[in-house]
Structure formats: C-alpha cells, structure tokens
Image 1 (tube, helix red, strand yellow):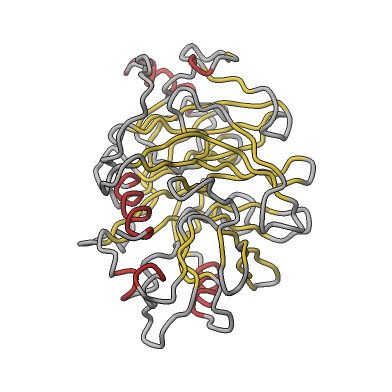
Image 2 (tube, rainbow, N blue to C red):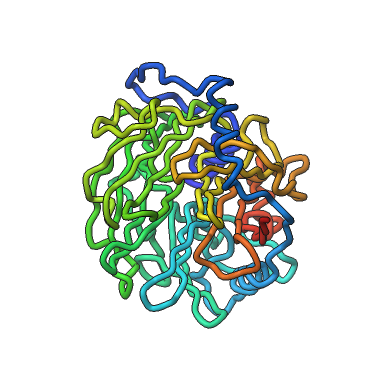
Length: 388
C-alpha cells in the first residue's frame, strides 16, 4: 500500500459526499438546525439583497494557464496536477495558489504521467504545495530540493499529513489553514482528522512556514473551508463532516490575523467565545466552499452534498457574511462526472479579475491508474459565474 493510495483515494471518497473515515473520539452534542419556518422567514428577509445567477462559462485564461504549466517538462520537479485549489493575492500583486495532494514530475507525449515513486515510477506525490502566478506564468513551490521535493507544510512523522484550506493575509504575512490527518492502523481506512492549524509564511520565502499555530479543534469542526474579510472581521467557515450530512459552521476574528480571539456563531444568531456553542448553520455544503461579497449581498458557492456524488455546483444567498443562506440556485453541472470520474469542492476566488465570480472545482477518479493514464483528470477546472 503506497502513500499515494493511502492518502489520495480515501480523500476522494470522503469529499464526494460519504465517508468511511472513523469519526473523532469526542462525542459532540446535537446542534440545532433552523426549522423550515425559520428558513422561510430568512429567505423572505434576504430576497432584497440576494444576487441571482445569470450565467456560467468556462474561464479560458485559467484553463490555459494550468494546462500549459502542467504539461511543461522544462522542469521535472514542478506541478502536473493537484486538488484543493485555494488562492490569495500577495502584497506584490502575484497570485498564490494553494494545493493539497500534488503530483510533481513529467508528462509523457501521450498525455499520461509515470507512476509515483512509491510504485517504481518517477512522479513525486506530496500532500501539499504552492504555485505562484505572475505575468501569465506559474512557478511551482515546494520544500526540499529539485531532486527530492518535500511538502511546504511538512508532517510531524510518517503517520501524519496536512491538507490545505483557505488562506489570508495578516500584516503582510501569509496565513494558510491546514487540517492534520493521522493514521492509526494498517487498514486502508484507518485514518482520521486530527486537528486544525494555521501556518504563517513570508511572501518572499514560501518554501516553509515561519511558524505553525494550533487553531480551535475541540468540537469536530474543520476550520479551513473558506475565509472572508468583511466589516473589520475575518470570517472563517468550517465543516462538521459526518459524511452525509455535512454542516456549515461560522467563526470570526476581529482584524486580519487568525491568531486573534475567536468567536462562534450560535443558533440564535449571536456570538460566543466558546467553540462548543458553534451552531450548525445549514447542511449541504462540501468540505471546501466559499462565501463572497457580490453586490449588496453574499453568495455561498459549494458542490451540492445533499446528493451523493453530485455533479452540481449550487449557490445560496444572504444579506450578511454569516447568513442565513437561502434560495438555492443551480450554477453548473460538471461535464466530467461519469463512471469512475467525479467532481468536488467548488469554491470562488473573488480576488481574481473576470466578468463575474471566478469559481474552481476539482476532478478525480476512484481508479488510481486513471491519474497515470490521463493527466487532465487530476487538475482543477475554472468557471466565470455572473450574477444579476
């Protein structure tokens, strides 16, 4: 059993709407979900500021950018595919792309890639990486050396690894959220979420973090799904992943840094300093989703996890960054979804210029050898979503 098979494949299943991952050892108390009457009242109140989806089209620029970068064999220690796909505008104006599981290496003339090193090939597999975009070109960032690349967020040992979440800027320092997972046995499914952390990076030296700090992790919420700065606060969006359903949670920190004092949205719409009070805002979100300001309102973009292995990306609207989010709208049906191939974790990139809101989603396969046969499978797709 290789590192690739034990890390990438279970992630794919967990993010697709169901999971065989054992639940954490803590026993969280039931958290209320808004009643149908409360949801209807919220929908009526939100209608005045709720943007509605006008149309969706492929973002040709980003699609071409990542295709060219992934197929370029001028370096053999650079990106050929990944998932995660968060982004952040750096102080220099460059765009930082934040990835989780990543392939590094070459692409063969027929569009295939060699197997991973652990299976006797030459492709390097890392659990996280960066890429930086400037002037229409991407450059891959990893730690280690060109001959032996390592993750930018290193694991503590061989039984732990980090998958990336959203990122933010705090006083010129890059703060990236990560979820640590741990292996506790030899079986294919003997792994589980362990904790949330934030790693701080200098924009000019992204190969390794300046420091790593614990984030709240005591009540089963992965605080890494999305980040939004609004009204003097940094809002942090999380997911309580029970396989099906998955619940949205909202926290906030005054100011820019995630190292500040956290408070959590309660079921009554007030805020508490106690993480145990964090309420289930709604169900149906994916492990990665986003909340963005659009006009006078806020739009939540997510894959629809109310359906198992859904190809549908949907949007909800609200009048505040913490909801309530109502008025489910269809955004896009991913054409890649068929047979072994599935899509997941759509979210927006509001700092990227375009005719609307730039949205990415990930593509994967339940068959590991598909990733060797066709490099395009394990690469993000990009959309432009316009609103009225």
